[in-house]
Image 1 (cartoon, one colour):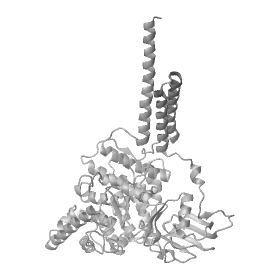
Image 2 (image 1 turned 60 degrees about the vertical axis):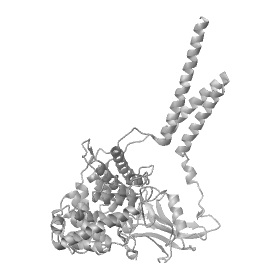
Image 3 (image 1 turned 120 degrees about the horizontal axis):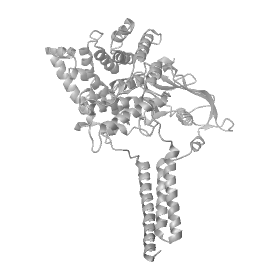
Image 4 (image 1 turned 90 degrees about the horizontal axis):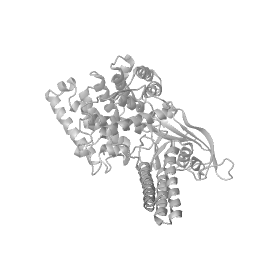
Length: 556
Protein backbone atom coordinates (compact mmCIF):
# COMPACT_ATOMS: atom_id res chain seq x y z
CA UNK A 1 0.00 0.00 0.00
CA UNK A 2 1.32 3.41 -0.94
CA UNK A 3 2.11 6.00 1.71
CA UNK A 4 -0.56 8.35 0.37
CA UNK A 5 -3.09 5.53 0.54
CA UNK A 6 -2.10 4.73 4.13
CA UNK A 7 -2.56 8.40 5.05
CA UNK A 8 -6.02 8.42 3.50
CA UNK A 9 -6.97 5.26 5.42
CA UNK A 10 -5.55 6.73 8.65
CA UNK A 11 -7.49 9.94 8.21
CA UNK A 12 -10.61 7.94 7.45
CA UNK A 13 -10.21 6.01 10.67
CA UNK A 14 -9.70 9.22 12.65
CA UNK A 15 -12.78 10.77 11.11
CA UNK A 16 -14.77 7.61 11.80
CA UNK A 17 -13.55 7.53 15.40
CA UNK A 18 -14.39 11.21 15.92
CA UNK A 19 -17.78 10.70 14.35
CA UNK A 20 -18.51 7.88 16.79
CA UNK A 21 -17.36 10.02 19.73
CA UNK A 22 -19.42 12.99 18.56
CA UNK A 23 -22.44 10.76 18.03
CA UNK A 24 -22.12 9.28 21.50
CA UNK A 25 -21.74 12.76 23.02
CA UNK A 26 -24.90 14.03 21.34
CA UNK A 27 -26.82 10.85 22.13
CA UNK A 28 -25.76 11.06 25.77
CA UNK A 29 -26.74 14.72 25.94
CA UNK A 30 -30.11 13.99 24.38
CA UNK A 31 -30.69 11.09 26.78
CA UNK A 32 -29.81 13.29 29.76
CA UNK A 33 -32.07 16.11 28.63
CA UNK A 34 -34.90 13.66 27.94
CA UNK A 35 -34.50 12.09 31.38
CA UNK A 36 -34.24 15.41 33.21
CA UNK A 37 -37.02 17.31 31.50
CA UNK A 38 -39.16 14.52 30.06
CA UNK A 39 -39.45 16.23 26.69
CA UNK A 40 -42.28 14.89 24.58
CA UNK A 41 -43.41 15.57 21.07
CA UNK A 42 -45.08 18.92 20.54
CA UNK A 43 -48.83 18.93 21.03
CA UNK A 44 -51.54 21.50 21.07
CA UNK A 45 -52.73 22.93 24.36
CA UNK A 46 -56.04 21.11 23.93
CA UNK A 47 -54.22 17.78 23.52
CA UNK A 48 -52.15 18.46 26.63
CA UNK A 49 -55.26 19.23 28.67
CA UNK A 50 -56.96 16.11 27.34
CA UNK A 51 -53.97 14.00 28.33
CA UNK A 52 -54.09 15.54 31.83
CA UNK A 53 -57.72 14.42 32.03
CA UNK A 54 -56.88 10.91 30.85
CA UNK A 55 -54.04 10.67 33.34
CA UNK A 56 -56.41 11.62 36.16
CA UNK A 57 -58.81 8.86 35.09
CA UNK A 58 -55.93 6.38 35.03
CA UNK A 59 -54.78 7.50 38.48
CA UNK A 60 -58.25 6.75 39.86
CA UNK A 61 -58.38 3.41 38.01
CA UNK A 62 -55.02 2.42 39.49
CA UNK A 63 -56.16 3.55 42.94
CA UNK A 64 -59.22 1.31 42.75
CA UNK A 65 -57.43 -1.54 40.95
CA UNK A 66 -59.69 -1.44 37.86
CA UNK A 67 -58.43 -2.21 34.36
CA UNK A 68 -60.98 -0.15 32.41
CA UNK A 69 -62.91 3.06 32.96
CA UNK A 70 -66.22 1.24 32.53
CA UNK A 71 -65.21 -1.24 35.23
CA UNK A 72 -64.47 1.71 37.52
CA UNK A 73 -67.99 3.06 36.91
CA UNK A 74 -69.77 -0.29 37.26
CA UNK A 75 -67.90 -1.40 40.38
CA UNK A 76 -66.14 1.21 42.53
CA UNK A 77 -68.59 4.03 41.82
CA UNK A 78 -71.61 1.77 42.23
CA UNK A 79 -70.34 0.60 45.61
CA UNK A 80 -70.41 4.20 46.92
CA UNK A 81 -72.81 6.10 44.64
CA UNK A 82 -73.55 8.83 47.20
CA UNK A 83 -69.88 9.71 47.59
CA UNK A 84 -69.38 13.27 46.32
CA UNK A 85 -65.86 12.50 45.10
CA UNK A 86 -67.12 9.64 42.92
CA UNK A 87 -69.84 11.91 41.57
CA UNK A 88 -67.20 14.42 40.46
CA UNK A 89 -65.57 11.75 38.31
CA UNK A 90 -68.97 10.74 36.92
CA UNK A 91 -69.80 14.35 35.97
CA UNK A 92 -66.40 14.75 34.33
CA UNK A 93 -66.85 11.61 32.22
CA UNK A 94 -70.35 12.70 31.17
CA UNK A 95 -69.05 16.11 30.08
CA UNK A 96 -66.00 14.68 28.31
CA UNK A 97 -66.77 14.62 24.55
CA UNK A 98 -63.99 12.12 23.88
CA UNK A 99 -65.34 9.35 26.15
CA UNK A 100 -68.53 7.28 25.80
CA UNK A 101 -69.71 5.33 28.83
CA UNK A 102 -72.71 3.38 30.11
CA UNK A 103 -74.12 4.81 33.33
CA UNK A 104 -77.19 2.57 33.63
CA UNK A 105 -75.75 0.44 36.44
CA UNK A 106 -74.53 3.50 38.34
CA UNK A 107 -77.90 5.20 37.88
CA UNK A 108 -79.72 2.22 39.41
CA UNK A 109 -77.26 2.07 42.32
CA UNK A 110 -77.62 5.80 42.98
CA UNK A 111 -81.43 5.58 42.94
CA UNK A 112 -81.40 2.72 45.45
CA UNK A 113 -78.86 4.52 47.67
CA UNK A 114 -80.97 7.69 47.70
CA UNK A 115 -84.04 5.79 48.89
CA UNK A 116 -82.06 3.86 51.48
CA UNK A 117 -80.42 7.05 52.72
CA UNK A 118 -83.71 8.88 53.10
CA UNK A 119 -85.55 6.04 54.86
CA UNK A 120 -82.70 4.79 57.08
CA UNK A 121 -82.44 5.70 60.75
CA UNK A 122 -79.10 7.46 60.18
CA UNK A 123 -80.52 9.51 57.31
CA UNK A 124 -78.61 11.39 54.65
CA UNK A 125 -76.95 14.79 54.93
CA UNK A 126 -78.99 17.55 53.18
CA UNK A 127 -76.30 18.72 50.77
CA UNK A 128 -75.37 15.13 49.89
CA UNK A 129 -79.02 14.41 49.08
CA UNK A 130 -79.32 17.57 46.97
CA UNK A 131 -76.16 16.94 44.95
CA UNK A 132 -76.90 13.23 44.55
CA UNK A 133 -80.42 13.87 43.30
CA UNK A 134 -79.06 16.33 40.71
CA UNK A 135 -76.41 13.78 39.68
CA UNK A 136 -79.13 11.13 39.34
CA UNK A 137 -81.05 13.37 36.96
CA UNK A 138 -77.91 14.04 34.90
CA UNK A 139 -77.06 10.34 34.49
CA UNK A 140 -80.63 9.08 34.05
CA UNK A 141 -82.36 12.02 32.36
CA UNK A 142 -85.45 11.84 34.57
CA UNK A 143 -86.72 12.58 38.07
CA UNK A 144 -88.91 9.50 38.20
CA UNK A 145 -87.79 8.65 41.70
CA UNK A 146 -89.59 7.54 44.84
CA UNK A 147 -91.79 10.20 46.48
CA UNK A 148 -90.00 9.78 49.84
CA UNK A 149 -86.79 11.00 48.23
CA UNK A 150 -88.44 13.99 46.54
CA UNK A 151 -90.32 14.93 49.70
CA UNK A 152 -87.13 14.94 51.76
CA UNK A 153 -85.05 16.75 49.14
CA UNK A 154 -87.52 19.49 48.28
CA UNK A 155 -89.08 20.24 51.65
CA UNK A 156 -86.54 19.24 54.32
CA UNK A 157 -83.11 20.18 53.04
CA UNK A 158 -83.07 23.68 51.55
CA UNK A 159 -81.58 26.11 54.06
CA UNK A 160 -81.39 23.43 56.76
CA UNK A 161 -77.59 23.50 57.08
CA UNK A 162 -76.52 27.03 56.26
CA UNK A 163 -75.28 28.52 53.01
CA UNK A 164 -74.23 25.27 51.34
CA UNK A 165 -77.74 23.82 51.67
CA UNK A 166 -78.98 26.89 49.78
CA UNK A 167 -76.23 26.46 47.18
CA UNK A 168 -76.90 22.79 46.52
CA UNK A 169 -80.64 23.35 46.88
CA UNK A 170 -80.61 25.84 43.99
CA UNK A 171 -78.32 23.54 42.01
CA UNK A 172 -80.76 20.65 42.50
CA UNK A 173 -83.78 22.71 41.47
CA UNK A 174 -82.11 24.11 38.34
CA UNK A 175 -80.67 20.79 37.18
CA UNK A 176 -83.86 18.81 37.82
CA UNK A 177 -86.23 21.60 36.80
CA UNK A 178 -88.13 21.63 40.11
CA UNK A 179 -90.39 24.66 40.49
CA UNK A 180 -92.22 23.63 43.64
CA UNK A 181 -90.39 23.28 46.95
CA UNK A 182 -90.12 24.85 50.40
CA UNK A 183 -88.35 27.74 48.64
CA UNK A 184 -88.79 29.11 45.15
CA UNK A 185 -85.65 29.61 43.12
CA UNK A 186 -86.04 33.37 43.50
CA UNK A 187 -86.29 32.95 47.29
CA UNK A 188 -83.04 30.97 47.36
CA UNK A 189 -81.31 33.62 45.24
CA UNK A 190 -82.45 36.33 47.67
CA UNK A 191 -81.13 34.31 50.62
CA UNK A 192 -77.77 33.90 48.92
CA UNK A 193 -77.52 37.57 48.03
CA UNK A 194 -78.15 38.45 51.67
CA UNK A 195 -75.24 36.20 52.70
CA UNK A 196 -72.66 38.01 50.56
CA UNK A 197 -69.79 39.47 52.60
CA UNK A 198 -68.71 43.10 52.33
CA UNK A 199 -65.58 42.07 50.43
CA UNK A 200 -67.77 40.48 47.72
CA UNK A 201 -67.12 36.89 48.72
CA UNK A 202 -69.18 34.22 50.48
CA UNK A 203 -68.19 32.12 53.48
CA UNK A 204 -69.41 29.41 55.83
CA UNK A 205 -68.78 31.56 58.90
CA UNK A 206 -67.30 34.94 59.73
CA UNK A 207 -67.31 38.13 57.69
CA UNK A 208 -64.49 37.47 55.20
CA UNK A 209 -65.10 35.73 51.90
CA UNK A 210 -63.70 32.25 51.20
CA UNK A 211 -62.55 31.11 47.76
CA UNK A 212 -64.35 27.76 47.65
CA UNK A 213 -67.68 28.97 48.98
CA UNK A 214 -67.61 32.04 46.72
CA UNK A 215 -66.81 30.01 43.62
CA UNK A 216 -69.45 27.38 44.37
CA UNK A 217 -72.06 30.08 44.97
CA UNK A 218 -71.21 31.69 41.63
CA UNK A 219 -71.63 28.32 39.91
CA UNK A 220 -75.22 27.94 41.09
CA UNK A 221 -76.12 31.60 40.47
CA UNK A 222 -74.82 31.41 36.90
CA UNK A 223 -77.96 29.88 35.27
CA UNK A 224 -80.10 32.70 36.67
CA UNK A 225 -77.57 35.39 35.76
CA UNK A 226 -77.32 34.08 32.18
CA UNK A 227 -81.10 33.40 32.00
CA UNK A 228 -80.35 29.94 30.69
CA UNK A 229 -83.88 28.60 31.09
CA UNK A 230 -87.39 29.74 30.24
CA UNK A 231 -88.04 29.83 33.98
CA UNK A 232 -85.55 32.64 34.56
CA UNK A 233 -86.46 34.49 31.40
CA UNK A 234 -90.00 34.72 32.73
CA UNK A 235 -89.06 35.25 36.38
CA UNK A 236 -87.07 38.43 35.67
CA UNK A 237 -89.69 40.07 33.43
CA UNK A 238 -91.78 41.54 36.26
CA UNK A 239 -90.83 44.70 38.13
CA UNK A 240 -89.78 42.73 41.21
CA UNK A 241 -87.96 40.23 39.02
CA UNK A 242 -86.06 42.99 37.23
CA UNK A 243 -84.98 44.47 40.58
CA UNK A 244 -83.81 41.04 41.75
CA UNK A 245 -81.84 40.55 38.54
CA UNK A 246 -80.16 43.92 39.03
CA UNK A 247 -79.11 42.87 42.54
CA UNK A 248 -77.95 39.53 41.17
CA UNK A 249 -75.80 41.22 38.53
CA UNK A 250 -74.20 43.44 41.17
CA UNK A 251 -73.55 40.40 43.37
CA UNK A 252 -71.89 38.49 40.52
CA UNK A 253 -69.65 41.44 39.64
CA UNK A 254 -68.50 41.86 43.24
CA UNK A 255 -67.83 38.15 43.69
CA UNK A 256 -65.79 37.95 40.49
CA UNK A 257 -63.81 40.99 41.60
CA UNK A 258 -63.19 39.36 44.97
CA UNK A 259 -61.85 36.16 43.38
CA UNK A 260 -59.68 38.11 40.95
CA UNK A 261 -58.14 40.11 43.80
CA UNK A 262 -57.03 37.06 45.81
CA UNK A 263 -55.45 35.00 43.01
CA UNK A 264 -51.91 33.89 43.84
CA UNK A 265 -48.83 34.71 41.76
CA UNK A 266 -48.71 31.12 40.51
CA UNK A 267 -52.25 31.37 39.15
CA UNK A 268 -53.70 29.30 42.01
CA UNK A 269 -55.99 30.13 44.94
CA UNK A 270 -56.06 29.68 48.71
CA UNK A 271 -58.85 28.77 51.10
CA UNK A 272 -58.58 29.94 54.72
CA UNK A 273 -54.94 30.85 54.14
CA UNK A 274 -53.81 27.58 52.50
CA UNK A 275 -53.16 27.43 48.76
CA UNK A 276 -54.73 24.26 47.41
CA UNK A 277 -55.87 22.58 44.23
CA UNK A 278 -59.56 22.38 45.22
CA UNK A 279 -59.88 26.16 45.50
CA UNK A 280 -58.27 26.60 42.08
CA UNK A 281 -60.57 23.94 40.61
CA UNK A 282 -63.68 25.63 41.99
CA UNK A 283 -62.72 29.01 40.53
CA UNK A 284 -62.23 27.37 37.13
CA UNK A 285 -65.68 25.78 37.38
CA UNK A 286 -67.20 29.14 38.37
CA UNK A 287 -65.76 30.90 35.31
CA UNK A 288 -66.96 28.09 33.05
CA UNK A 289 -70.48 28.32 34.51
CA UNK A 290 -70.52 32.09 33.90
CA UNK A 291 -69.19 31.72 30.31
CA UNK A 292 -66.06 33.68 31.22
CA UNK A 293 -63.01 32.59 29.16
CA UNK A 294 -61.01 30.54 31.65
CA UNK A 295 -57.52 31.01 30.23
CA UNK A 296 -57.78 34.36 28.46
CA UNK A 297 -59.71 36.62 30.84
CA UNK A 298 -57.18 39.17 32.05
CA UNK A 299 -58.74 39.31 35.51
CA UNK A 300 -57.54 35.75 36.12
CA UNK A 301 -54.04 35.90 34.71
CA UNK A 302 -50.88 36.75 36.56
CA UNK A 303 -47.43 37.49 35.21
CA UNK A 304 -46.46 34.24 33.53
CA UNK A 305 -49.33 32.13 34.88
CA UNK A 306 -53.00 31.36 34.35
CA UNK A 307 -55.54 29.08 36.01
CA UNK A 308 -54.40 26.01 34.07
CA UNK A 309 -50.80 26.49 35.19
CA UNK A 310 -52.03 27.26 38.68
CA UNK A 311 -53.88 23.94 38.82
CA UNK A 312 -50.95 21.94 37.45
CA UNK A 313 -48.85 23.10 40.42
CA UNK A 314 -50.69 20.42 42.38
CA UNK A 315 -50.24 17.56 39.93
CA UNK A 316 -47.99 14.78 41.26
CA UNK A 317 -45.64 12.54 39.31
CA UNK A 318 -48.13 9.68 39.74
CA UNK A 319 -50.67 11.79 37.74
CA UNK A 320 -52.92 12.40 40.72
CA UNK A 321 -53.50 15.82 42.31
CA UNK A 322 -52.69 16.91 45.84
CA UNK A 323 -54.66 19.07 48.24
CA UNK A 324 -51.67 21.28 49.01
CA UNK A 325 -48.05 21.16 47.93
CA UNK A 326 -45.67 18.44 49.16
CA UNK A 327 -48.44 15.98 50.08
CA UNK A 328 -49.47 12.65 48.48
CA UNK A 329 -52.09 12.58 45.73
CA UNK A 330 -55.61 12.22 47.06
CA UNK A 331 -58.99 11.34 45.68
CA UNK A 332 -60.90 14.49 46.53
CA UNK A 333 -58.33 16.84 44.99
CA UNK A 334 -58.01 14.69 41.84
CA UNK A 335 -61.77 14.40 41.34
CA UNK A 336 -62.23 18.17 41.48
CA UNK A 337 -59.16 18.76 39.32
CA UNK A 338 -60.39 16.43 36.55
CA UNK A 339 -63.75 18.22 36.60
CA UNK A 340 -61.94 21.56 36.26
CA UNK A 341 -59.68 20.22 33.50
CA UNK A 342 -62.76 19.04 31.63
CA UNK A 343 -64.16 22.58 31.88
CA UNK A 344 -60.90 24.03 30.54
CA UNK A 345 -60.90 21.52 27.68
CA UNK A 346 -64.49 22.39 26.77
CA UNK A 347 -63.66 26.08 26.94
CA UNK A 348 -60.59 25.71 24.70
CA UNK A 349 -62.39 23.48 22.16
CA UNK A 350 -65.39 25.61 21.32
CA UNK A 351 -65.65 24.24 17.79
CA UNK A 352 -66.43 20.82 19.24
CA UNK A 353 -64.62 17.52 19.22
CA UNK A 354 -64.65 15.62 15.93
CA UNK A 355 -61.94 13.08 16.71
CA UNK A 356 -62.13 9.46 17.77
CA UNK A 357 -64.41 8.70 20.72
CA UNK A 358 -63.04 6.15 23.17
CA UNK A 359 -65.56 3.69 24.69
CA UNK A 360 -65.12 3.51 28.47
CA UNK A 361 -64.75 -0.28 28.26
CA UNK A 362 -61.68 0.22 26.04
CA UNK A 363 -60.11 3.00 28.10
CA UNK A 364 -57.25 1.33 29.94
CA UNK A 365 -54.18 2.22 31.96
CA UNK A 366 -51.18 2.70 29.68
CA UNK A 367 -48.22 0.71 30.85
CA UNK A 368 -45.11 2.81 31.30
CA UNK A 369 -41.57 1.67 30.81
CA UNK A 370 -40.24 0.36 34.14
CA UNK A 371 -37.82 2.54 36.02
CA UNK A 372 -34.87 0.11 35.55
CA UNK A 373 -35.16 0.50 31.77
CA UNK A 374 -34.97 4.27 32.09
CA UNK A 375 -31.83 3.79 34.14
CA UNK A 376 -30.21 1.08 32.03
CA UNK A 377 -30.34 3.00 28.73
CA UNK A 378 -28.40 6.07 29.99
CA UNK A 379 -26.11 3.74 31.96
CA UNK A 380 -25.13 1.64 28.96
CA UNK A 381 -24.59 4.70 26.76
CA UNK A 382 -22.46 6.38 29.43
CA UNK A 383 -20.38 3.24 30.09
CA UNK A 384 -19.71 2.79 26.40
CA UNK A 385 -18.71 6.42 26.05
CA UNK A 386 -16.46 6.36 29.12
CA UNK A 387 -14.84 3.13 27.97
CA UNK A 388 -14.11 4.55 24.55
CA UNK A 389 -12.76 7.77 26.08
CA UNK A 390 -10.41 5.93 28.45
CA UNK A 391 -9.22 3.63 25.67
CA UNK A 392 -8.46 6.59 23.39
CA UNK A 393 -6.66 8.40 26.23
CA UNK A 394 -4.40 5.41 26.96
CA UNK A 395 -3.61 4.94 23.29
CA UNK A 396 -3.27 8.58 22.17
CA UNK A 397 -2.37 10.32 25.45
CA UNK A 398 -4.67 13.23 24.58
CA UNK A 399 -6.54 14.98 27.38
CA UNK A 400 -9.62 15.57 25.20
CA UNK A 401 -10.51 11.89 25.42
CA UNK A 402 -10.27 11.84 29.21
CA UNK A 403 -12.31 15.04 29.44
CA UNK A 404 -14.96 13.43 27.28
CA UNK A 405 -15.09 10.47 29.65
CA UNK A 406 -15.48 12.77 32.66
CA UNK A 407 -18.28 14.70 30.94
CA UNK A 408 -20.09 11.45 30.32
CA UNK A 409 -19.65 10.48 33.98
CA UNK A 410 -21.15 13.80 35.10
CA UNK A 411 -24.11 13.36 32.78
CA UNK A 412 -24.65 9.89 34.15
CA UNK A 413 -24.52 11.18 37.73
CA UNK A 414 -26.92 13.97 36.82
CA UNK A 415 -29.46 11.51 35.47
CA UNK A 416 -29.32 9.44 38.63
CA UNK A 417 -29.66 12.57 40.75
CA UNK A 418 -32.70 13.73 38.75
CA UNK A 419 -34.38 10.37 39.17
CA UNK A 420 -33.80 10.52 42.95
CA UNK A 421 -33.17 6.80 43.17
CA UNK A 422 -33.35 5.41 46.66
CA UNK A 423 -34.01 1.86 47.80
CA UNK A 424 -37.36 1.15 49.36
CA UNK A 425 -35.72 -0.41 52.41
CA UNK A 426 -33.98 2.87 53.18
CA UNK A 427 -37.40 4.41 53.78
CA UNK A 428 -38.89 1.46 55.64
CA UNK A 429 -35.92 1.00 57.94
CA UNK A 430 -35.91 4.55 59.25
CA UNK A 431 -36.31 4.38 63.03
CA UNK A 432 -39.22 6.13 64.65
CA UNK A 433 -38.53 8.38 67.62
CA UNK A 434 -42.19 8.30 68.62
CA UNK A 435 -43.30 4.68 68.25
CA UNK A 436 -40.92 2.40 70.11
CA UNK A 437 -40.28 -1.33 70.08
CA UNK A 438 -42.63 -3.27 72.35
CA UNK A 439 -39.52 -4.53 74.19
CA UNK A 440 -38.16 -1.03 74.85
CA UNK A 441 -37.40 -0.24 78.51
CA UNK A 442 -38.75 3.30 78.23
CA UNK A 443 -42.03 4.69 76.90
CA UNK A 444 -45.72 4.40 77.70
CA UNK A 445 -48.35 1.94 76.41
CA UNK A 446 -51.46 3.19 74.61
CA UNK A 447 -54.23 1.90 72.36
CA UNK A 448 -54.52 3.73 69.02
CA UNK A 449 -56.94 3.53 66.08
CA UNK A 450 -58.20 5.51 63.07
CA UNK A 451 -61.84 4.86 62.26
CA UNK A 452 -64.06 6.07 59.40
CA UNK A 453 -67.03 3.86 60.20
CA UNK A 454 -69.47 6.78 59.98
CA UNK A 455 -68.89 6.90 56.22
CA UNK A 456 -68.83 3.10 55.84
CA UNK A 457 -65.08 2.86 55.36
CA UNK A 458 -64.36 1.06 58.62
CA UNK A 459 -60.96 1.10 60.28
CA UNK A 460 -58.21 2.95 58.41
CA UNK A 461 -55.89 1.69 61.15
CA UNK A 462 -57.25 -0.98 63.52
CA UNK A 463 -57.05 -0.62 67.28
CA UNK A 464 -53.44 -1.47 68.09
CA UNK A 465 -51.37 -1.52 71.26
CA UNK A 466 -48.39 0.82 70.82
CA UNK A 467 -45.44 1.79 72.98
CA UNK A 468 -44.68 5.47 72.44
CA UNK A 469 -42.18 7.96 73.78
CA UNK A 470 -43.11 9.82 76.95
CA UNK A 471 -44.35 13.33 76.19
CA UNK A 472 -45.79 12.30 72.80
CA UNK A 473 -48.91 14.13 71.65
CA UNK A 474 -51.86 12.66 69.77
CA UNK A 475 -50.54 14.31 66.62
CA UNK A 476 -47.06 12.84 67.12
CA UNK A 477 -48.49 9.33 67.16
CA UNK A 478 -50.95 9.98 64.33
CA UNK A 479 -48.29 11.36 62.00
CA UNK A 480 -45.89 8.49 62.76
CA UNK A 481 -48.56 5.82 62.25
CA UNK A 482 -49.52 7.39 58.92
CA UNK A 483 -45.87 7.61 57.85
CA UNK A 484 -45.02 4.04 58.77
CA UNK A 485 -48.25 2.57 57.38
CA UNK A 486 -48.18 4.81 54.29
CA UNK A 487 -51.57 6.34 55.10
CA UNK A 488 -52.19 9.72 53.47
CA UNK A 489 -52.27 12.58 56.01
CA UNK A 490 -52.92 16.26 55.31
CA UNK A 491 -52.78 18.87 58.05
CA UNK A 492 -52.26 22.58 58.59
CA UNK A 493 -49.40 23.65 60.85
CA UNK A 494 -49.60 26.45 63.41
CA UNK A 495 -53.35 26.86 63.17
CA UNK A 496 -55.53 28.28 65.90
CA UNK A 497 -56.62 24.73 66.69
CA UNK A 498 -53.22 23.66 67.99
CA UNK A 499 -49.88 22.71 66.58
CA UNK A 500 -51.62 20.91 63.75
CA UNK A 501 -55.15 20.88 62.37
CA UNK A 502 -56.10 17.62 60.62
CA UNK A 503 -57.66 18.20 57.21
CA UNK A 504 -57.59 14.79 55.58
CA UNK A 505 -56.65 11.18 56.35
CA UNK A 506 -56.56 8.38 53.79
CA UNK A 507 -57.89 10.84 51.17
CA UNK A 508 -61.03 11.59 53.23
CA UNK A 509 -61.31 15.33 53.92
CA UNK A 510 -63.26 17.72 56.07
CA UNK A 511 -66.52 19.00 54.53
CA UNK A 512 -66.53 16.06 52.10
CA UNK A 513 -69.64 14.64 53.76
CA UNK A 514 -71.34 17.88 54.69
CA UNK A 515 -70.64 21.31 56.10
CA UNK A 516 -70.12 19.89 59.62
CA UNK A 517 -68.02 16.89 58.67
CA UNK A 518 -64.36 16.35 59.53
CA UNK A 519 -61.81 14.44 61.62
CA UNK A 520 -62.04 14.48 65.43
CA UNK A 521 -60.33 12.58 68.22
CA UNK A 522 -61.36 10.93 71.43
CA UNK A 523 -59.22 9.89 74.41
CA UNK A 524 -60.69 7.35 76.86
CA UNK A 525 -64.15 8.01 75.44
CA UNK A 526 -64.02 11.80 75.87
CA UNK A 527 -63.40 14.52 73.30
CA UNK A 528 -60.74 16.92 74.64
CA UNK A 529 -61.21 20.64 74.07
CA UNK A 530 -57.61 21.18 72.92
CA UNK A 531 -55.95 20.42 69.61
CA UNK A 532 -54.23 17.15 68.72
CA UNK A 533 -50.88 18.92 68.82
CA UNK A 534 -51.30 19.93 72.47
CA UNK A 535 -52.72 16.77 74.05
CA UNK A 536 -49.90 14.81 75.72
CA UNK A 537 -50.58 11.13 76.22
CA UNK A 538 -50.39 9.11 79.42
CA UNK A 539 -49.84 5.40 79.89
CA UNK A 540 -53.05 3.41 79.37
CA UNK A 541 -54.76 6.04 77.18
CA UNK A 542 -57.12 4.79 74.47
CA UNK A 543 -56.88 7.16 71.48
CA UNK A 544 -59.43 7.13 68.66
CA UNK A 545 -59.15 9.26 65.52
CA UNK A 546 -62.69 9.42 64.16
CA UNK A 547 -64.48 10.90 61.15
CA UNK A 548 -67.71 12.72 62.00
CA UNK A 549 -70.39 13.94 59.63
CA UNK A 550 -71.98 16.16 62.28
CA UNK A 551 -69.27 17.70 64.53
CA UNK A 552 -69.20 14.66 66.80
CA UNK A 553 -72.93 14.22 67.39
CA UNK A 554 -72.91 11.01 65.33
CA UNK A 555 -70.07 9.61 67.47
CA UNK A 556 -71.92 9.64 70.79
